[in-house]
Length: 238
Image (spheres, rainbow, N blue to C red):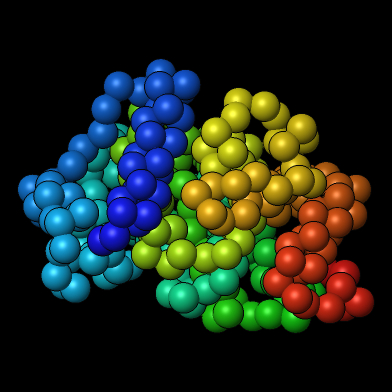
């Protein structure tokens, strides 16, 4: 890793720790394998120690770091193009996602798929994941201590993919990636920088199912991303 890469990594670690402090978290779990990989970063580490999605998923393992594992059926790691220019980050899996082990496959997922297709893309062109990898009971928002255990893995996912743009879906993802505790209604519609990646917060598709009048605002947010990606904004609305 060169000097620039090391400074970026340190900035990501600082970002995560600051967010954890804001939400009242005091620490997170780290495995022996992760510690060994960290020791190699910044020291001319061989290629096999560089971050990949496979490494991240291996370190996540059969995760029992927080109580969410007790009620889950599947860990929902993420899926899509490992070199995607655009990543969608949600809050956590729902019932259908927990059953299938895939992100955004329920009713909200079908709406997200329509949004992606309206952009002129497919799910295979982007990467889709969540802040937490296990379903919170009754689809509630994840708790700070649950987020604390999962966000290091999200950071590593983003580092492995290195997208140009991230669409943060809902409050939890938007607040983490923007490092702000402002409501999603105040964060949406403008870009934030996350270590060289441009983040566009917008409403979660599940919120749109309950508040369809907000679809226009989401489409306006998505069109900003499309312009940055060089995609035509004349496409059909989702």
